[in-house]
Length: 169
Image (cartoon, rainbow, N blue to C red):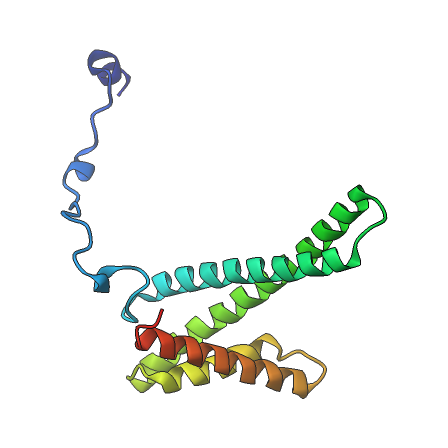
């Protein structure tokens, strides 16, 4: 290996790499793009969806925290900046983590329900959303909280599913 490098200025690639199939061209249609299609594999859906909702939750929660920090203010400029940063870091990661976990539950339930029913329709989204929100808050002291999370999650995920199927996103 080392003598190969000294003689040629590079390392010869192993035969298994030279025999590996290569992708010949870029995606040829919109159907092959990542944002399109519900026919994606489970891992791709999970990774993309969780990452996207974490980012959206982080941005939304951080913006909400910034507004609260601006409202609260501070007596000096350093305390003012500190107030804004503390509020951003309190609400941003909390909403990002919460939305990512609920989305992880949703994608898992949606895949399971689609497999069990043998159909991929909007009923799966509503059911999966309700189960995801309910599972996230199942340990709450009140069933009211669990019900609220179920209803809101079902509504959000059904709306997103409707938008994706209609080509609006």
